[in-house]
Image (cartoon, rainbow, N blue to C red; front, side, top):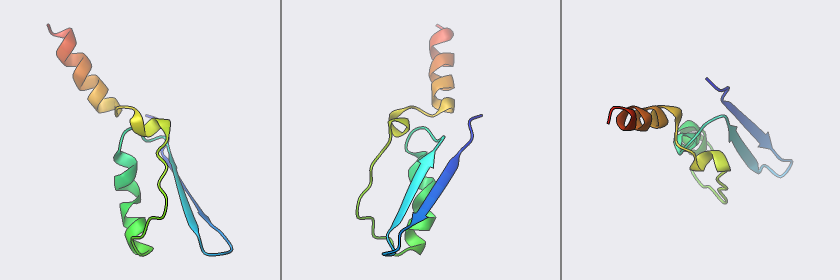
Length: 70
């Protein structure tokens, strides 16, 4: 299993940046949801990484299992 990391950077002006690595698919949004809500829920800019476009490993395994049984 890949290491999942959440990096939080708080600038001098109070701006908060959150970077998530090691998480494939949209699961990163679930991971950061509570933090976003605790900070007021206002997201000014969201940039998705290439990992966000990848399918989570369990989905890949399910797809593999379906196609290999045919």
